[in-house]
Length: 380
Image (cartoon, rainbow, N blue to C red; front, side, top):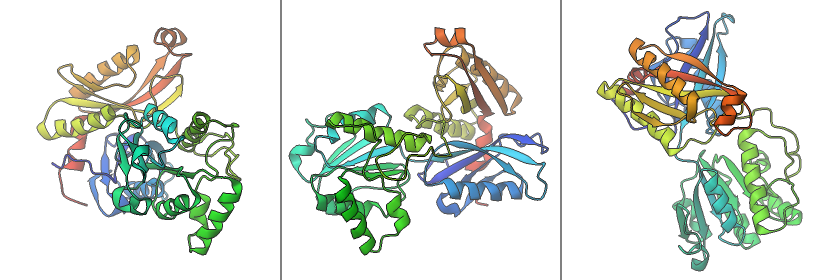
């Protein structure tokens, strides 16, 4: 069984169905980047085709999501699927190690990003200056394409010390399908760079996706405040918020909110270990939050692996809600049948667990054996 999840693969799992086979929930396929190949089965051709189209349309944002798919020939037949792109850990790449990079690197780490800072001046990327980041790289900005691997898991912030360096970096990064791309600068500078990009033959649609001027319009002045407004815009893009950006024409709420969170190392490890359990025949169940409402400790995409002997890996928030899911998981292991379980956190329970108010979580619990077909080789 292939148990390594390479960057660019997306797992599609059926979590609910309407007017379809009762055995459909838990069926899954693994789709490679660009839809080049598929492994596993969703049992129905129309469902697999619809899932592949959905993955292709949403592969650039790299976010966990759920969607309802409808049979075009029989609209009464519907299936809800979770789309789970397996990407490298979300990374924040800061091009320029100056006064804004310092607080932005700290904020990026708090938000769960793997932070890399690049500058062509050794003193500005020293280990002492950026002691907690994943990487601090000293190189010419001309070499960033050779040094960095840019893709859907990358958020890139350009804050170099000069106009020409900013333009050089932007002209290189703009070619890649990154999650977020922003550049600092005055409106006069932005106008000049936009025109230069157009003159260089860069497509206007790509230029319009660049956040420039970067950040939300909160009146930021100090380096720390500017770092906050940049990080806030990154959150806005991920969540679909409605706060006004400094870039013109971005004051409307995005109509595709993502009520999910960036995957933690433990979330990824839980998924990986579920595949290993399927390979080795170890009794286990994987619990994945697929939807939340109100105040919950974790959001969609969070995972926990429960073994039959009582061991767990990862967390979906702890407390009584997690204990409830663990009990449900034991039943899933015994029955070898996936189920969608709703956890309700009353106001009293929420207060006891440190939340402002109560909420609900929908958790999809599936036996680890569900991963066997999708990861045992044999492309479709």
